[in-house]
Length: 266
Ligand code: SF4
Image (cartoon, rainbow, N blue to C red; front, side, top):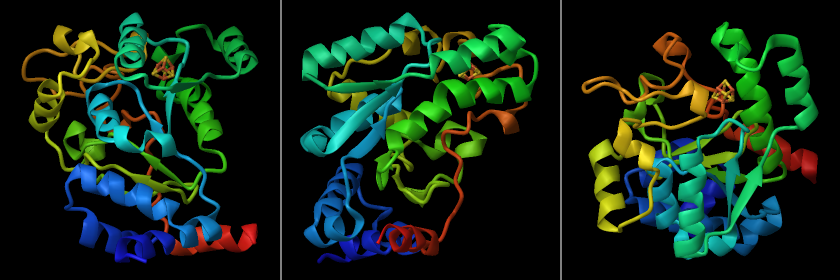
């Protein structure tokens, strides 16, 4: 068993970041897939397919291209919140057509959204941070939790340079539920990302060419002005420090949590 596989088996996040966090993105992705498919690991952890939660934003199209050789082991999941812009569906269709990419779509529970809209109004996320987080919880976080249920690991296209809140993103982390969360682009710059996407002529969201560096739900995303922070167009009416939807909360859990889950399972 390789040292990388051993470190993943024991969820040794510190060692993973120290010894493998500097690897190039393709080696990280391939190493993680191979480790999770190692017989000892799958026997112990019962590893199912990995998940890649893709928004089809710039980083995510780059990463899903890097992941293409291992797609048999990965479910690409899109969270269709019910408020996504048409341009996001357009780029999804281009990936299906050009790469034959299989895309799993998770949606919010219709009745939960209906009850929230009846109680507060369809655009109540503008009223307060609390209302906005409730909307993100219903439309994004709970569908993601359903997608991740029973999984041990997932990929994300997070980069440290995306925002102040993401400056400490690590390549390897544990999410609040103790799943291994791998962000192979953590150290990429925006220029690196554009270079990769252009070099491989990848389909990308046309809104990026219209001043939208970061794209989420239509009513919560606007174009940014030259020189503005790349996340300035997301929930622009809130303070910078509050501007995350909760999808990427990091708990810095220790391996004990991972082991406790194993003990519970066995
Ligand atoms: S980004 Fe806006 S519309 Fe989308 S789930 Fe969050 S608050 Fe709701």
